[in-house]
Image (tube, rainbow, N blue to C red; front, side, top):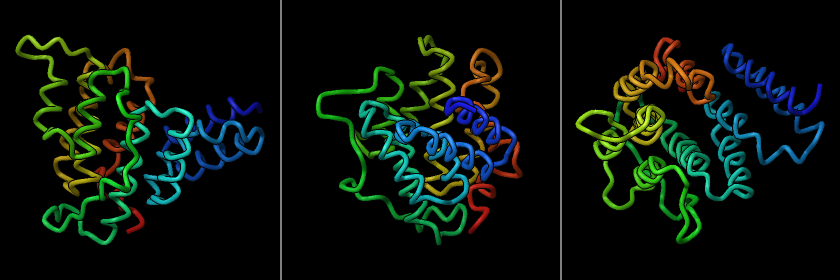
Length: 218
């Protein structure tokens, strides 16, 4: 199999819920061609769901080294760091949450931004910048009240609100609420159903609860 075939198979393994299997195929792609290493962001997500937060963070940092404008890699790294920091916290004990120091977070190059407008709000929320709140991101992605947001904007706002509550705020109930809303969005059920983030969101919702899966080793 070619490295690309191995990555594709790894993605399918994740879709089937075989996280360890997905990593084995991503690793095999890397062994075939180590130039794939900084592009295996899917492996970082698998590590995250296996509670391998240090390995996940390392993968996302490697990704950003070749793609510094991709907010999603920065956000997933913050999620890994947050989960590692709060690994001993009980689910939904948001009052005991510790927050990652800004100095430990990756950031976009000064004056530059992700080309996707919705990602600017996601970035600010996860980094705790510009006073951005969950409500701001929800509004940015909302398709009501004359808002011109796209179907993908709606999905990604809900998806990352779910990840934010899961990883940063340690609020399992809100995380599951947003992930279910993302699952029912027009993007996830239609054109975007093959988007890897749609597959990730489906993995969470199809599990008993997203938080139980993410804390399966805890």
